[in-house]
View (cartoon, rainbow over the protein chains, first blue to last red):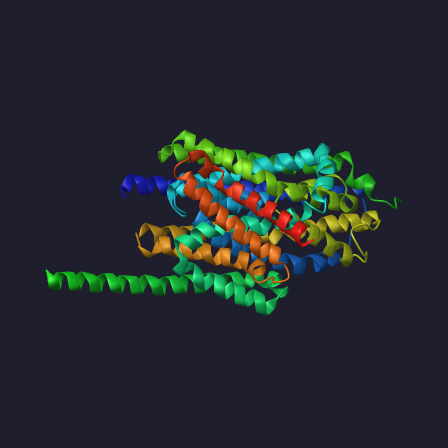
Length: 240
Length: 237
């Protein structure tokens, strides 16, 4: 990598984080302005102690899960896409798959500079489309869509939307790297089977464990492949 | 004293506050999209490929957006017209918002989202659903040092780095998929994963020859999986 390219990348990353942090701070302020504004407007007295006690458990659970999710997605789709995903929500069911799909169709690998650029554009496009549909929803679409989505023949399709999305997103990567896929999938399945419904609640704490197991197993395979390659080189030199 | 909260939830003030928050998020997405396009051009990604990404991502996002409208319909009686709009457009997710609202309602002594709340309870619920997601949103500020560390590892040119990223991705996919893969009570879900997976492999192979198929392989496979789920459930009765 040339020096100017390295400098250019560093400047770009600096910009992404600067814009990401400032815009996230603005979005959060606008977001908090809603309860603040309606408290002032309505003039009702609010018991903040009760709010804190009812909010805290949920906030800690969501905080851990959110932080882990962001940390694990950043090296894959890049920090810019994570900043936008964080503000617009629906990350695992929409933004993350959109980013993966964009990298797949353009052939730019995850974690690469080009991969991060296309993932960023994909996440933004997905965010704009979703916001537009939800906007149409509040104007007229929701009452029209509701009978369709609650039709007994259509309901199973939407109940199983996330499994369908997972199958479409995960399979190409599992087929491409079956050796790497075995450990995290097996470990997650065992945990999900043993924990049952508690799995969803503990996911934020379990995810780092699965990622560490996955990376650990990948490192073992990597070292063993390196050793094999070194041995093959030695053997070839000997025969030569 | 008002006994009902709709004078707050459906007020112009509420509409204004929610609209401003959504506009803020839209501006962030548009600005980042511009950065993404510029970065793509800098890196030599041709504009057709970028357009292809926008179209494919946009089309893919339509189907998963529809259940959000159902969540909206569920939340409207409880939170009014505008708060669910912002809650489903900013930060959260359809599944989380319904759960958070339900937990908040119960914390204030009501039995369900369909109860008639007092204005005090409504404002408190608005605080709770907003506050509950704040820690997660604030964790975004940890990204910079973390990303710097990851990028410096990448910069050292370690051969293991691409494998590490793939391993992290597969770890993430494993934890997302596991609850569905072991849910033997919902065989339809397990078979849906298989059908969508098989479809994407077939479409990706066709896509090697027919470019347009590759572009829509992901969305097409997801929809095929969903159609299978509906058909299989109808077959099971």
